[in-house]
Length: 116
Image (cartoon, rainbow, N blue to C red; front, top):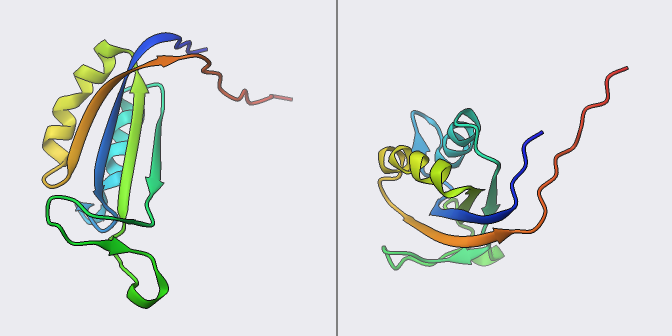
């Protein structure tokens, strides 16, 4: 069982929903690489409205449907593992924003598969 408590780092990658890596969503590639790297976990959050460096506002409002809504990929693990993963983000993220901040993990428990 993986245990993660106490000080950790959170990396958040802000990209567009339509950003791709080799014909598949970029957020999917980031999550799969984080999984292969053995990181504690990764989640993808789809925004309803936002803008970034391009200053274009992307929104899900009915009258101006966007196919490129903002997406945030959040990954949390200990500092050593996150810093070792950062070069992969340099390779993957051509446009967007990557932030890194300290956090404290209070509870991290996974679900167990019950074998019969």
